[in-house]
Image 1 (spheres, rainbow, N blue to C red):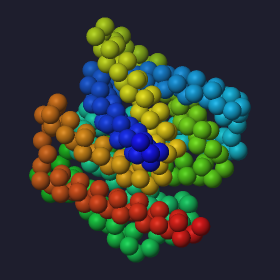
Image 2 (cartoon, rainbow, N blue to C red; image 1 turned 180 degrees about the horizontal axis):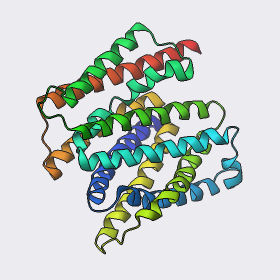
Image 3 (tube, one colour; image 1 turned 120 degrees about the vertical axis):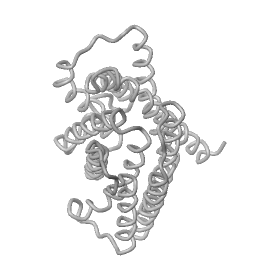
Image 4 (cartoon, rainbow, N blue to C red; image 1 turned 180 degrees about the vertical axis):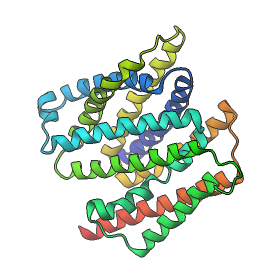
Length: 290
């Protein structure tokens, strides 16, 4: 296979693994405190990051050297908070509805990049953002007689992840991807370790198998994603990421018996279409500025 083909395979494998990770996260999160589950997962993730960094040129000290350490630490904390919202949302709202709303994250990033990054967003991308947000409203379906207030969880999670993406862009201007990846794992593990022990719970023997699966999917998924970014442009990887939405929705229906309403399906299609257009416009704008 060519390098690009290999990168595409890595991307598809990564999103497939992440979809499986979401399913396992919902299973464990419904049995134990999500913060406790996330802490164990992050401990394994941090160990993986440290071992990977030790093999890089300059070792751990070289990788950990950052020109903006406070920003990097902030990124790590933001992501672990977002994962707390995500797993709680998987349990209380459902995999399908949560991931459909999370698909709007690139649109939120585009909107927030104006005040936070000073970027200019033209009328085409603003139109895509408006269409995507209308799609989110369709998924939420506020016309229902009894709107479940828990639906706000994935909305907040999407905004938090957008903030993580923006801080990652800022960090990427001065630090390498390896440095950002290091702080994602280590800072996140340190942050959750301040809170997680208060939620410590004894896992049933059989659930340690699921916990091991959660840790392995996290490490392997991130590794494949790193390899994909080495071989394929970021835009292509972002676009393939939408496959995860489809997979998670399918798994939610097959495993947990979740129901996909016509509002959710049409709304998700609008969000994904608007997101893909936004990603394409941003990549085109970046090429023209070179």
